[in-house]
Image (cartoon, rainbow, N blue to C red; front, side):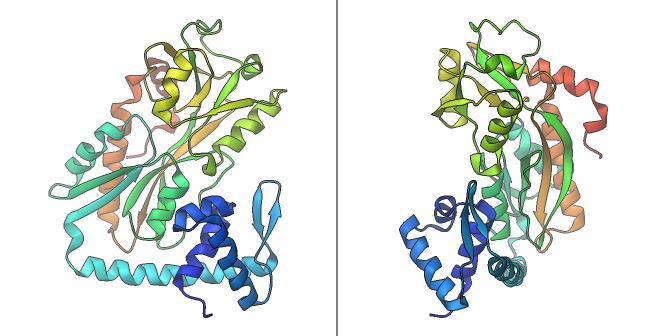
Length: 318
């Protein structure tokens, strides 16, 4: 067996996700098929590429060398096909991605205003890791990424990024009937007896960050539910659990959204794009459009609006 592009993408997907299960989903294989294929690749290169750890899988020293070289090859391949697609006349279209934030409703219009004449498509995805992977493989041209502090998202050349919002706090959502719902802010330690809904985008580090924050507050969270963002709302409203949320969303009926005292979790927003697809001028226009879309929705949640007004240092640099 000879190594091909598919094998290199598999190796990089495992490294970036830290999980055979998540990597298998990214590349469209079953986990047993990926495990077998990985063993064949390891046999070919002459040693183990990954070892199991408490958090998933980690590269061996040999794995680090193979991954570094694989990323160089994949970058060249993606650049080649990006150049060919650009030469074929696809400049009139723009494929955008975004994490699930309140401003998604305005992104197409605002970016469209900044780039008249462009046909814009939008993929909304809770996982910044999957958006970054789509950028790397050329399925997106640019994306708005949310990154939890302490957990980086791998961006491989020719993908580059610029910070949109350098820091903003993660809030907590709970039932309007909850005894703490009237508080202006909530101490994480006061939620130690609650059932938790797992945050979306767990492969981005959000679940690990939740566990770490709760442990720092003196307890282990009881994570009882897993649900996409929209599906979790009735669970919160009916008092079955609490969950961490992006602060820009308005509180759904039957719920309240409150800041966590001391900001135990913060995130940042990045605009990432492929330099082989987009000129600096086009990337700048996309940045301005995304900045306008985000600020359009800051006051959707008045609690976050007050925080935003009090922290002008985090506003986008236009």
